[in-house]
Amino acid sequence: MNIPFTMLEKSELVAEFIKEAAKEKMVQLKGHRSVGGGMRVVAFLKEFHARHA
Image (spheres, rainbow, N blue to C red):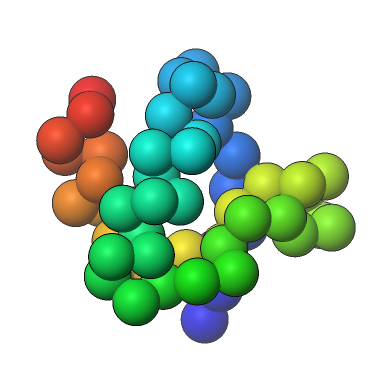
């Protein structure tokens, strides 16, 4: 299941999120038409949020 979302409060972390997700073998997350260019992701979101909240 994909969950489209955007990082509105901390948009400066988008590039870092994509970079770290790639290390976890998650690619092609950036861009999803249903949220106007947001990202798609799975469980990695919770772990990333915990480190950057």
